[in-house]
Length: 426
Image (cartoon, rainbow, N blue to C red; front, side, top):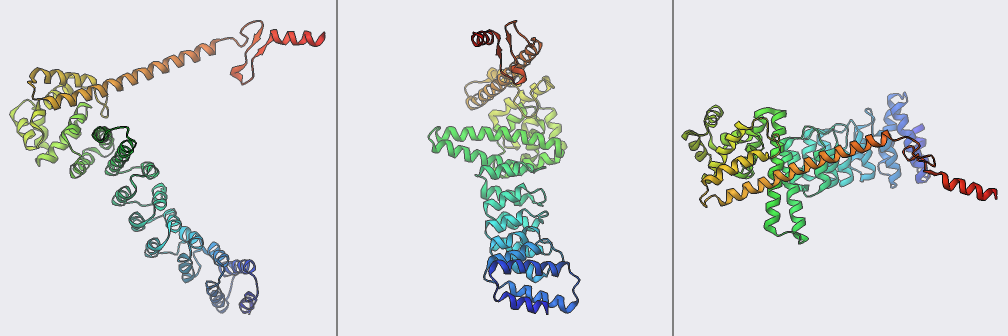
């Protein structure tokens, strides 16, 4: 009887009153101890409100049913397919919506609805894949920043493929913990491409110079990624990343030589395994005897440039000689580069022009990095000395001045203060 009275009253009530009544009826359905007939009547009345012309009435239903596990599934499904401002609470919170329903809503929803799905407390991998494929930019960013999203690697790579030129998208993905190395590599490529396009469009650099700088920065980042992958996932992770680099045509002689001159032997050996097709133990044995003919044959089989062989041998010799002296596994070592340059200059008969030019660029980069590090250390030491000197100064500097700057108060000039007092007294 109460439900019949409600339906009769709703025929004449205004939209605001109907919205308030819809919320009250929804709460009665969820929390009152209704018998089965009354519960069924209430459900019918709630279903009828789905046809209400005013969106605030349907929004009242969505707000009350969004988090309820005992809400009528049919009503929740209908609300999830309503306009986005009504569907958003249900899409973001309802425990009743299945993975298939969420995927369907993502396929037909706008950016607001898709973002609501992407920000759910738990987003299954299938829903993540759907959003990565068809979601708007805002939904993709929401998905990337959501720690509850079970984002598969292929979905992240698809997001980079679609929105990699967007800096906010790249930043959101990079903030995710345990980001796969292949995804980080794709993000580096996207950032390099975006920056290269920007500087060439502005006319700041020629296409050739921009491409070289982008390639060198990408190689530098890849060496860092490989080093961190080795620490986190071991040699298996490095080999998987090297296979990805080869498939994406990034595994170049320049990258491998850069890694070796940075002290990263793992990338060098993994590259030889990947390019030669030989077993890992066989490759590592040949690399240990890098002066022998077996290593030269391995080098040729890997398809690396023949003119670069002296540089690789010299780099391996320098790595053995300067073990523990180089700058780490992510930064070029100046002492190793100088050792390789000396060895290559001794045999250079004009045929190693490209190699020498590459080594000179490596030398310049390592020297600049070393200078920056040294300058930063000197600046930090000078700042520390200044702080210690200031800390040792007395609070009252002279009999005529009190300087309380360190306490946030202005300095007091006692001479001016005395003159002001005398003038006032006169």
